[in-house]
Length: 173
Image 1 (cartoon, rainbow, N blue to C red):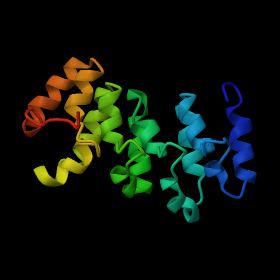
Image 2: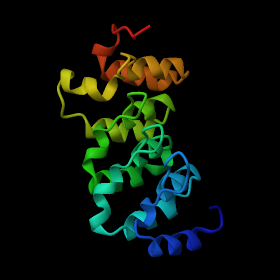
Image 3: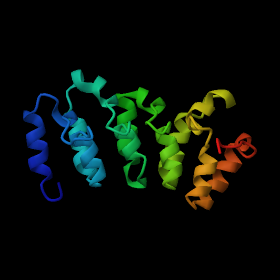
């Protein structure tokens, strides 16, 4: 994709599913691949050109259950894209991948503080029990556990300060 962004965008306009066309054996779409390639401007362009009747397909998951928001959550440079995605498909915020992780969880896993802060504001209206869905995987591992395991100690401190109820929680192990 590097250097071929115009060609990619032009091709997507010709496809029935546009940028949501599946192009890998693991069910990645053009948008997934543009996100992996860190082509933020291409991702924004593809989202802008996506017809409204395809917006329901933004929740499409790849072979490991990741949505485009899950992939976007692994970078601090894509907060604007995450904002645009959530405006077009708010349901993405509550989707889990096959590991039971939300996009907020992935931001914690990869230590992406800016992205984490943005996504955390999007779930800030929930009470403690409502938050659990976003901050804990199905195996009981929390965003605090993951930030520590991934050696993102500044983010772990931030999480412990903001979500004190996670401090004493045990994971599934």
